[in-house]
Image 1 (cartoon, rainbow, N blue to C red):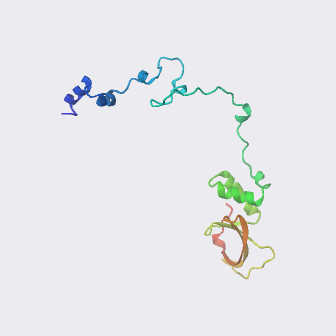
Image 2: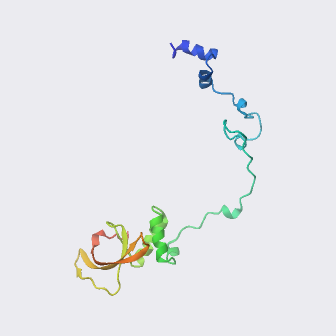
Image 3: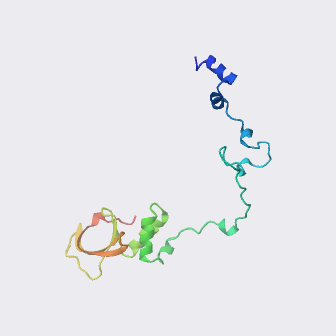
Length: 168
C-alpha cells in the first residue's frame, strides 16, 4: 500500500530522491543560505535558482519632506481649474473624491450630467428652447465629447429633465 504505513517506510529509507525531497524538503544551507548569520537573509538571497547573490541595496535616507502627508483635497481648489482640467479629473479618476469635486464645480459652471448618454452638456447662451414643458425641452446644447476633448454643438437635442443628475 503506497499511501499507508508501508509507503511511509519507503520515504524513511530515502530510496527515491524525488519522493524524499518532496516529503522532507531540502537543506537550505545547501542552497547557499547562511542561516546562522546575524544579517537578514532577504538582503542577499534572491532565490534557490539565482546564479549570484543579490547585490546589497545601498542604505539611503529618505528626506523628511517625502514623509509628509499631502494636504487634504478641498473643493476650493477646483474653482481655479480650467474647464478641460475638470473634465479630465472627472473622467480619469472614477470613484475618487476628486471626481466628486470636479462634478460639483462643473455643475456650478452650468454643466449638467446626462445619466443615459453619460455626457456633460450645457445650454447655449441666447438660444431659446424650441419646445418646453414640465418633463423636457428641445433646444441647442454644447455636449462635451471625450473623443475630441471639446464641447460640440448639438442642435434640436431633446433633454428630459429626469435624465439629468442632480446635486445631492
